[in-house]
Length: 255
Ligand SMILES: [Zn+2]
Ligand SMILES: [Zn+2]
Image 1: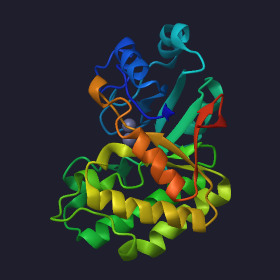
Image 2 (image 1 turned 180 degrees about the vertical axis):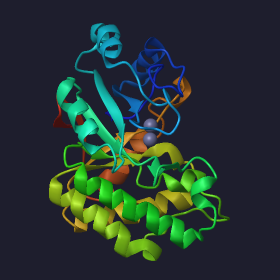
Image 3 (image 1 turned 90 degrees about the vertical axis):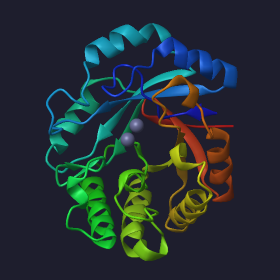
C-alpha cells in the first residue's frame, strides 16, 4: 500500500523531516509518494513554492521503489502553462493536482466565503475545479475533492453529493474521460458522515467511467503518515475502483 500524499519540509507549511516519514512508513509497511506544495502565483510571495533542484538533489538518495518523489500542484486558471512546464521539466513520479484557491482567494481564509451562501460558495468552488481540470489535462490525480469542507465558514460544511450532483458529476465525468485518477484523501476519515458522503461520490466516479484512485493522508507531521490508508483502500474496493500509485508518471496497482 502507498500513501501518495504527504508533505515534508520542502512544503512551506511542513517541518517534517524525510527520515521521520520513512521511519513511520517502515513501521506501517507502506510506500510513500512525497507531494510537496507548489502553488505558483500564490497571493503571498514565496509561500507554497519550493526549490525543485534542491528537492531532487537532497531526496534522490532516498528514492527507491517504496519512496517516490511527486508534487502537489496548485490548480489555477491563470498559471496553466507554468504548471505544465514544471511537470515537463522535472522528473516527478507523480503530479497531484489540487484546488486550494478559487478566484485567487485561499479557501483556508475568510475572504472567499464573505457574502456567499454555502450553496453559492460550493458551486463556485466546483465550477472553478472544473475550469482548472479542463486546462490541466496533464495531472495524474485530482486531490481532495472535498477540500472546501475543511475550512468553509458554515454550520454544516459537508459537501453533499445530492445537493451538488450536477457540478460534482461534471468534475467526475471529465476526470474519468481524461483517465485522471481521483484521490481518496483520508484527512476527514475520522468523521463518519464524511466517509459516507465521500463513498457516494467515489461510487458515482465509477458509474461515470472512473477506474483508478490514489490514496493519501495529506500528512504534515510524522504521526499522520499513512493514517487511514487501509480504510481508503477498502473504500476503493467497495466502489469497484482500483487503488494505484504513480511511479515515473505511470500508474502501478496496489495490492
Ligand atoms: Zn492540498
Ligand atoms: Zn497536501
